[in-house]
Length: 281
Image 1 (cartoon, rainbow, N blue to C red):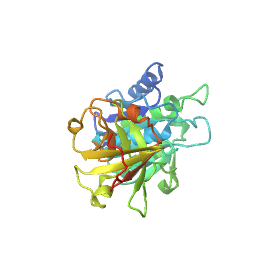
Image 2 (cartoon, rainbow, N blue to C red):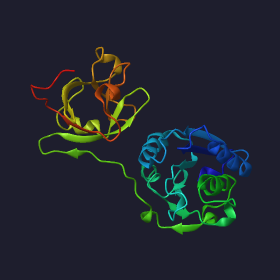
Image 3 (spheres, rainbow, N blue to C red):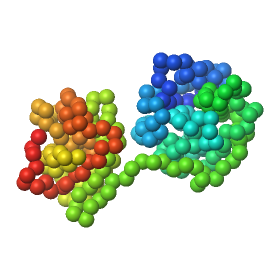
Image 4 (spheres, rainbow, N blue to C red):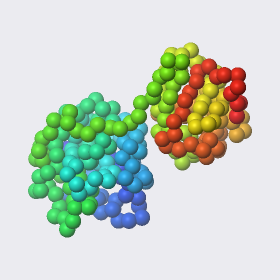
């Protein structure tokens, strides 16, 4: 496990934003314990309390992060009896609350080797209150791990099977050949990522360049499945395979989310063989 290599890396994600001092304080706590630590900021702009969005963000990024430690803090249950965790995987350790945030990334990395609840007060900061576990429990755990403290010193070992699972939605395949999915993510450009794998269309005989029928709420649109944004005509809603290998609705140089009036959680049904009544844009 390379977390003790010098200088170690920690990749940091949170919903703290950068307006307040929270991110800086957590970094300072880690660096006080491990001065050679190198910190990668994944993002601190996850919507407040949105555990699912944080889990999705982390799992999209996880395969590109350097070996070492991941600190992920989106913790609406702070101060309750929910646990804070350090989960060892083959290539490092993930630290965060036990609320499903870490689970998809742990699975992506091959599953947990060991896990501990961060309940040893010797490796925590004394806190005037219980509302900043990122500063008082999780950041110190990262710093101690980065300085060589063994994982099992940080708290009580847990059975990884008992950790809270992730809450990522799965698509539904209809007997009529339709695929019902959900909007997982809208990026800053307005591209709309769905939880639908392109292989689900390929299995239905759909090829790149074919047209599809896409339905959401009362809308029905005919779209083309294309390789690049630039293949779209002006203001044309189209389907692409995004950089994470999932289907996405997009419009070249415009916001598909705004144009289609969809957001995270919108249910979208893809029909491989569009009906004659489908609208072309």
